[in-house]
Image (cartoon, rainbow over all chains, first blue to last red):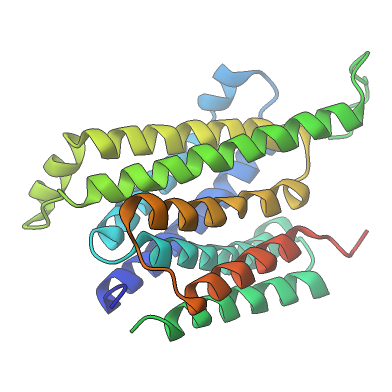
Length: 117
Length: 135
């Protein structure tokens, strides 16, 4: 088997936590005026980085067992969450392409799981 | 992005091109980071929270992997300031292709029809997400 259910659930958790990191980084990068230093000192950027570190810890625990080439692509589920937050936080519209993209990501993850045994 | 004072001598196309090259470089760093994380993850001791923290903190491949991941994130933020998220995000999906390739070549992982199909469908899905049809 290319991965256990435990690993799969940890990847889902990592992608969910990580999606908040993307929101924080986007929000931070829109506000920062100065150069690299002021960017790294921005609370939102820092919070985004911390969120990514937390997400990475879950991901590292996830990939301890099982194949990286199976588990890593499932991180793309994070896009599904990110799309949701983009709509709710930044008011970005849901478009036909976004729906299709999310559909393809879900299909791709399903295909990976078909070949899991 | 609509700053009232335009930067003299910089063209939008050039900035866009530089941002794209930077993001492709980020995907290569990102794939290298994943391989290092996978190698490092094997020696993480999940006996307790304490052993998890300790075995991660002293783990050279993990530290290198996270550093590369951090570097690629910082470069990505930099690129984001010059270009729209919608253009750059699809390029990040290149990482899935590099990771699949390197996992098979270096880690000896299996390659099946379903895995290739799954990755390609995910990559096309991510690429489609960034293709903004509202403009």
